[in-house]
Each structure stands twice: as C-alpha cells, then as structure tokens.
Amino acid sequence: MNTPVLILLSLSSNLHRRHLTQGQSAAIVSASQSWVKAHVADNAPLNSPASLDTTATRAKQSGVGQRTQQLADKLVKEAPAELVKEVIDGKKSLNKAIKEITPPKPPVIKPESVPIVALVSESTQDEQLNSLIDEQQGAIQALEADNKAMLKVFESDDRLFTSVEEVKSLTEQNRLLTERIKALMDENQEAIKAVSYWKDRFLTLEEALTKELAS
Image 1 (cartoon, rainbow, N blue to C red):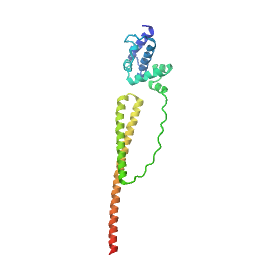
Image 2 (image 1 turned 90 degrees about the horizontal axis):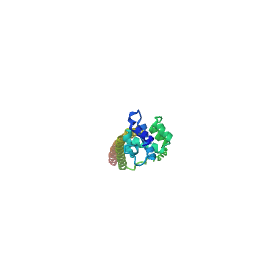
Image 3 (image 1 turned 180 degrees about the vertical axis):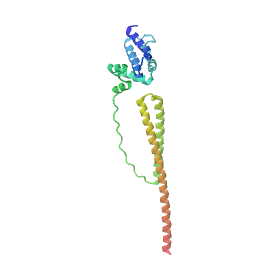
Image 4 (image 1 turned 30 degrees about the vertical axis):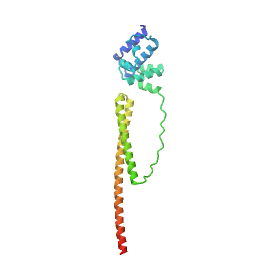
C-alpha cells in the first residue's frame, strides 16, 4: 500500500487519541474517505478508509453521531478545500462552515390579517368559539408531538435545541390563548343570562303597566 494511504489509515485509527472536536473528527474521516475514493483501487482491504462507504461506518470511525457525520460529508463534498482545512485545523466550527455554504432561506411573506366579522347570533358565536378551541388544542397537541420528536433526534445540536425552546414557548402561548377563549365564553354566557333576566323584568313591568292602564 502506498504512503498516502498509510498516512490516512494512521490518521483514522488515532482520531480518538487527539484532543479534537466532533466536527474536526467527522471532517477528517470524510476528507480521508473522499481522497481514498479518488486514489485507491476498488479492491482495497476492508480495514482501510475505502471501506467506510456509509454514514454509519464513518460516524463510528470518527466517534460522532450520524447527523454530525452527514454535515461533515456535506462540507467535504460541497465546500472549497480551504474551508474544509479550516474545520480540520480547528480554526472554524463545522456548524459555522455549513452555514457559509448553505444558501439563505427566502423571506417568509406573512399573510395579511383578516378582520374578524361580528357574529350573527349567540348560537353562531358559541359554535365558532368551540371550533377555535378545538383548533387550538389540535395545534397544541401537534406542537407537543413535534417537540418530543425533535428532542429525541436533535437534542445534541445547539441550533436545533433553540428551535425546540421556541416550540415550547409557542405551546405555552397557545395554552394561554385557549384559557382566554374559555374565559370569554363564560363571560358571554353570563351576559346572555343578564340580558334574559332584564328582558323578563321588562316584560313583567310592561304587562303590569298595561293591566293598570286598562283598569
């Protein structure tokens, strides 16, 4: 086996003996595998970097999670050699380098707010409030499910952990909104009772007055 391949084998086998970040280790293995694929014959021995042909095997070799290894593979495949070297040398983090080669997301255009139309009747108002509560509860359940899934998959990634915290905040806001809607419904019911009471009083007084005038 030629000297460059021996060097790569030695580098891969001694990754855990050096004080490297996970991003450095993953980038070293990805870069080694990329070089070997370009220069080593297909019949290379199984214990060489050429056998690291899956993300799982590369992640095992570098001692990192598959998500981190995927990012390193993306870096080696798409980034300039200078940027890859900065990550391997520890001059730049893997996440920061990935951000540099990832195109910015297009701005999100928020839909114009639609004014709330006055409810036609008391029954219609109750139906719409109940429907709104159901929608809010469904949204809360969906956010909680997404939150749990994201925690399991991305709990080691600081950037995605921030997104999980935002989901928690939105979940709490939805819960508070639901409680407010319920309170408004209670107030609405009390108002309906008050209107009914004074209507009955008015009709009673009107009837008494009519009888008095008739007599």
